[in-house]
Image (tube, rainbow, N blue to C red; front, side, top):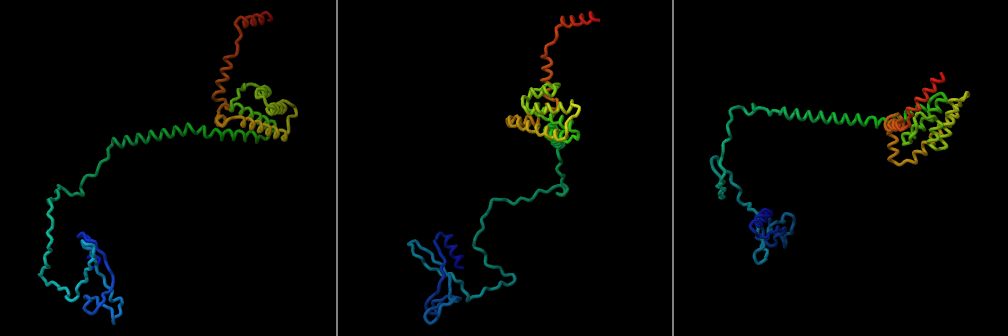
Amino acid sequence: FAAAAALIARAQGFASRVVLGFRLGGAGAGVDGVPACGGPVVCTGEHLAAWIEVRDASGVWVPLDVSPQTRLAPQALEQGEQSPPFPTVPEMRDAEQVDPPTGGGDPSDAAEPREDPVAQASLWSFLAAAGLSVAALALLALPFLFLPVAKRLRRRRRRSEPEPEVRALGAWQEVRDYAVDAGADLPRQAGCARAARELGSDAARWVAAQVEVAVFSPGGIDSRTADRVWEAADAENRVRRAELSRWRRVRAAYSLRSYGIGFAARSRSARESAAPRPKRGARRSVQTQGKART
């Protein structure tokens, strides 16, 4: 009751507080349910009481006892008897009571929302176009993703040839292919010696010389020499790779020039078109000389 009374006082604009303590004095100082203590009566927990204090306009805290009475018990209402009317008059609102609209059928029979066929067709068209675009990009990117793997498999196949001569020839092809992918302009029909001179490195010339011995000499080479040729080829490719920038290394890894596709074919056709052609008069003189000899 003390807490409720403090809230009521605050709602009325007064500063209030709840106080816990003991009522000291004689028997008349107590209230219903909470006797007083002091003097011959020792204060215990049964004497603890709660009341409120309200501050007035002068700033003085005035105690107010809000302990309920316990003498008169609440009376039960008989059948048909009404409780006293509540004195507060309810506020009248301007809202009017409106009956709900009456429909012609059961609300559960309402038609379900229909899907727009035009919107569905547009959605499926968009999804189909997106799927085709992704598939096309995947097909375009697939060769570039597979190309480094294909070159690695080609190198492994060349190095695992059982014949020493064929294995040594594969080492030279590996040197030539990497040089072409790295940007070297080598004649495709040139022999090993000429291509090695174009590359201009001692390792390439040594590999080319060993390959010519393996291919053209009667005795060929042994397996140990073929392994040394591969070691020299690997060293040559490492040196050439170290001389390239990072971007050129990526271009060499994804280049198709070693397969005869791309810039190499165009450069060969350009060289063939730029080669000098014999004059018509010279060709006729050669043909005339041939006829005279016959």
